[in-house]
Length: 256
Ligand SMILES: Nc1ncnc2c1ncn2[C@@H]1O[C@H](COP(=O)(O)OP(=O)(O)OP(=O)(O)O)[C@@H](O)[C@H]1O
Image (cartoon, rainbow, N blue to C red; front, side, top):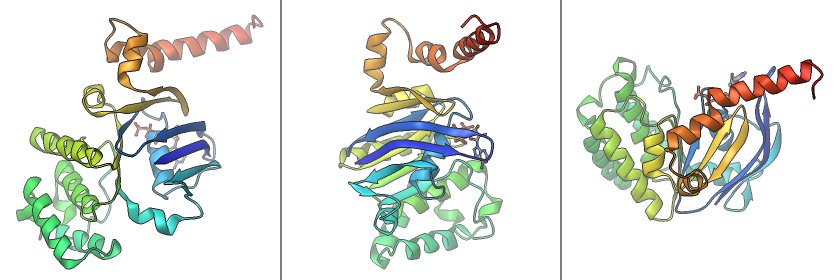
């Protein structure tokens, strides 16, 4: 289980997360949804120990992340939203690096590498530099790297971006299987159809605050006869921005 408890993240001039709390249960595919700048990547980067929160705590299987990083980090496989790291390595070199970092046995490494590289059809590109790859091929390379260790928790920041339809289909299938086996898949997306297809539960973020946490079915039951897109845009989109502006204007006019 993962628990975000009253997490706030302040950058120099921005409060990216404002006291957010939610839980992800074992066996769940969990979606983070929100406009650009809502705080999805910041949430993810804190969980994978790239960033520290300003206040609050994260628990993974009842262990507090800051205290038990050494235990928790090997449980997590992470794919960033911008596949622009390790560009001077060949794909094979990157996968070997991941194999060493996660201490994967040679046998498991070979087995999983063959399976995933054939599945994502990049087995023939293994001796090429990552910088020569298209966005989608880089995405596949990093996905393979994250899945090699078979970590319990997959943390995928906009994983389908740039993937072709076959790879998207295959990844969705892998995500479902992984969760079905009692593991956790946390991913961020702008694609509401993917969220609807995949997620057991979602968080909708807007300007660092949680607007909704629950299942998509519950959200739709509360807003009968409306599509997820209509509901989402009303609570997180331009209408919500207009409401913010109206409130601000009233305040300035001394109406409130
Ligand atoms: N390194 C940083 N320094 C300062 N501000 C940052 C930094 N990273 C993110 N922010 C700000 O924090 C807020 C949340 O950004 P974040 O990247 O978490 O959003 P996001 O929901 O992942 O957006 P996107 O969908 O565009 O990837 C934004 O206002 C962003 O400008």
